Image (cartoon, rainbow, N blue to C red; front, side, top):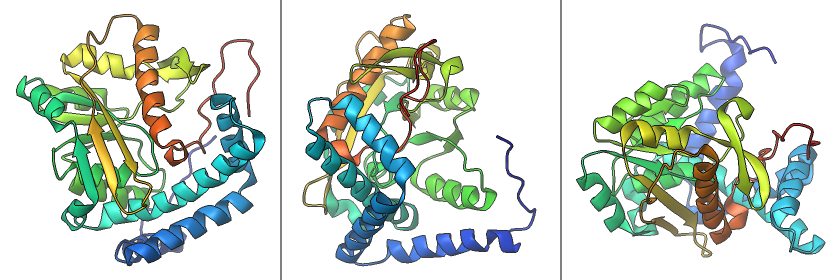
Length: 304
């Protein structure tokens, strides 16, 4: 697919919808919590009703990963996934546009001692996160306790990319393009913690096939590569919105022992096992809307 060409001036009418979206995000960020929650649920419910393609992808993912669920249970999970991700849009706006201190009272952070011990080694740290709907608000809440950089995928729209990067640079120490391996290594070797979420399908060129919920999934090798190049401890981070829909829990697990092993499949399998463990704590808050099993082993038909 050819890359879109955008006008050079952000004043061009083509950017007016983007300016409107940015303005709406700034307004949403300051709404009362209950109203913000209601709007998020409404956006999620409407998306569930209207966006058939993503509903099919979500249903396929959940059918593959939770075969023990009945059809009615899975349909409810699909709907709840859209609703949680609708709330996630409001959470993202809040994380990008508000001071994290405004929400310190909403977060419980467990396992901090694991990160303190890791950073005391002086080798930096590689934080392994997960693509939950709470991702960007989770990053903002994390910044109240530990500084960190973040690896991210740049947005194609240059105006939204500027807005997003400025917001993330305010939350994180530095936003690092996912293609900038040297930048990530440099920051880790300088003693920084770098947040990285290795749970999406970026194709077979950068991946190995490893089990994820019992399904062979294209799993990127970069986690082990970064750990090998830096010698940094790998820190699994779990975060989710609590059932009250008003508070959040972040938790560091102990660093992965004897990682990496030098076996890319074994290393990816261990990372996937942690991600699966994290997802099971709040299954519908995960980004099931993306094609996690898009890339298949040679000769195997696609799922979508």
